[in-house]
Image 1 (cartoon, helix red, strand yellow):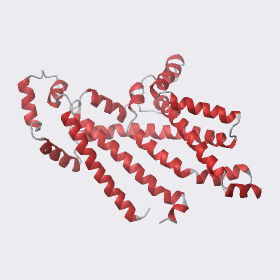
Image 2 (image 1 turned 180 degrees about the vertical axis):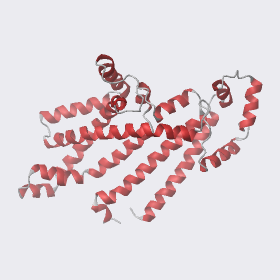
Image 3 (image 1 turned 120 degrees about the vertical axis):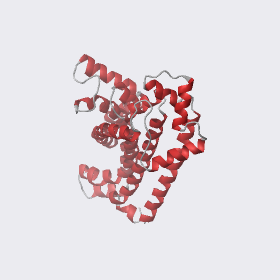
Image 4 (image 1 turned 45 degrees about the vertical axis):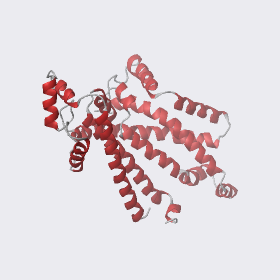
Length: 312
């Protein structure tokens, strides 16, 4: 990717972020509920009509929509995402505190997923239409069909309740507490990636360079890992980037089931408590992650596949 192309993508990211910020603020503006009432309830104060109106005047919530949006946007551009109505803490601080547990969960889940999907996908492609292939494909069908919350509850029942190996409530502060949610996330992702690995490897195995390598007597394992697999990386890395962005944004269902203190759990708490500032900050954060991860993935193509540099 050329510097001009990178600059264009950065401008595109900024433009999209402005659009997302406007739509998010608009949806929060027209959403039912009253932020002033939520603040008073969180503070243990009975929200009378007079107190609600006074607080709305103090916070500028009675101002016209564009006035509120421009004021909020100016604060965001200075790194101020506002204060959480329900927790009475800066939104930026809350997101940063929850970032590290989610980051660790993301990395652990992705490593576990790669350890499962790459060998299974390669085996399924090499032994196409055999009993091994059918068994692996059956696993992938099961993985993409079963919802995450059911897998999480099953893992909790077996490993936490029956065997007592894993904690029921995950603190996010140690390795053991990440195993349950990581297994849940890796199960569904590994099924999708296994099918993708199988598809791209089968396409590469039908290429002429593979036939030529076999004709020269090169060992099959060397062809697979030194030629076929590197040439299959581009579509896998694209999926990898999307998955990382999704997990860093927080996987709400899994985090809620295991009481994991991540971004997804924080987002659910914000929605249930009508914490508009926290919801807006979370949406902006998630959008930024997705677009930055995709930009990094596009840039990495030049280093992973030399053929991409020839198209510059």
